[in-house]
Image (cartoon, rainbow, N blue to C red; front, side):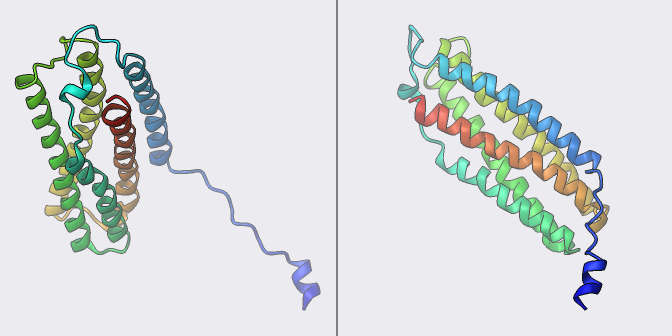
Length: 198
């Protein structure tokens, strides 16, 4: 028996090329990571170098609630992708819409924060170095959230039209990588802007 097993070793699984979608998304994330790195470094470099106020500790408040919403959306999108892979279309639709709602709450919260900073605290992008770097970094992230939400909304509409099927699982999973990236970047932005920068 052992000699037969030795004569016929178990076959190694054949290596296949990764999907173009995954490769493309990894390339996009790598490129966007480089862009965010530049903005984060610029923000850190200019901390405390504004010659006029207001300063970060004068105007910034910790956006705890909207941060919890955004980070929770990584869980809900994961649950949605898993449900689609199991052909549970109802669960997929539910978790996908919850992801859309959580991301929207974050974006609205960011808009409210900006309104507060501009009209009540007098901090605009032209006020000082802090204003310039703050709106550039947080705005860059908000832009990526907006792009992600538009894509999530489009998928939600297709879902309501019964156009999303289990065979689309891989495409939805590839997009979820982008959303996880956006959430991970927020952890860095939150740490740099609202903790280190204050």
